Image 1 (cartoon, rainbow, N blue to C red):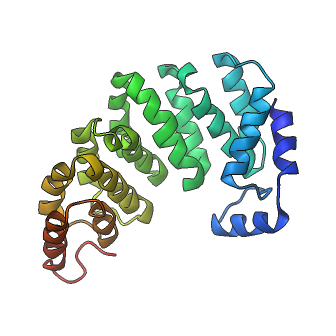
Image 2 (spheres, one colour):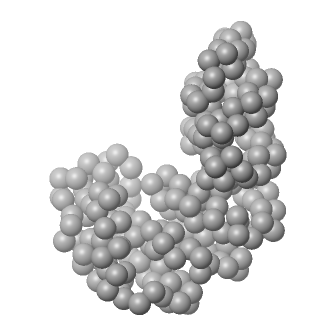
Image 3 (cartoon, rainbow, N blue to C red):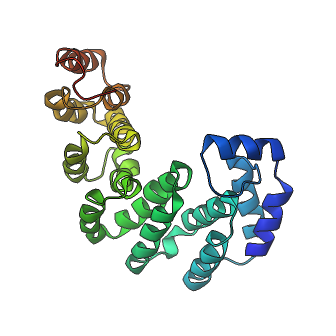
Amino acid sequence: MAQELEAELRARGDPVRAIQEKRYLKSQREHFGVSVPGIRAAVAEVAGRHADPTREELLSLVDRLWDRPAHECCFAAVELLERFGSLLEPADLPLLERLIRESGTWALVDNLAASVTGALVERHPELAEAMDDWARDPDFWVRRSALLVFLLTLRRGQGDFPRFARYADGMLDDREFFIRKAIGWVLRDTGRKRPELVHRWLLPRAARASGLTVREAVKHLPDTMREEILRAREASSPGTGGG
């Protein structure tokens, strides 16, 4: 199945797109030049020709795809983990952490964190404690993942906001773009259903938060809440919190 997928992905490739994507992602991997919808269609087509895998077959297939040099093969591995995520067990969390560490790009990390690991943690809430270590990890992709694990449940108006908020507070002074963006992203999507929660948490931290975090976070807040946070951010000393 790994060979079939690689062949299907190669057939869908566009050499011009491959060059552009490799440059855009600053990727060290080979690129075929397949769009995200194209990769998903290839996974669906090839998976549809086979019986659903067992957990052991899924993990073996993911390993085989991940070991291939092409970005699209790694993306297909993530898609399979999402597609058959109900097969994953708590014992598979170290595998997901390894894949996140080896990804080196948001294009792989974000679905691994939000859709795959997040779904596993939702089914097994005891795994949330492991995120405490992720949130302190030296690797910023792992720290970003600790934040994004809660994205989808918080977007639905559920989820463990206190734990996310604790992680976000600890990273609010982080200079890394992808951390600042992730904090704002999760707050933005939380604000769709619970704007008062985001407003209450962010207002006293507006001077500490980066401009990027604040701009993302307030996008779905009511006008009065958004303006109050932006005024608090602007009233802080010049340069506070960075860009």
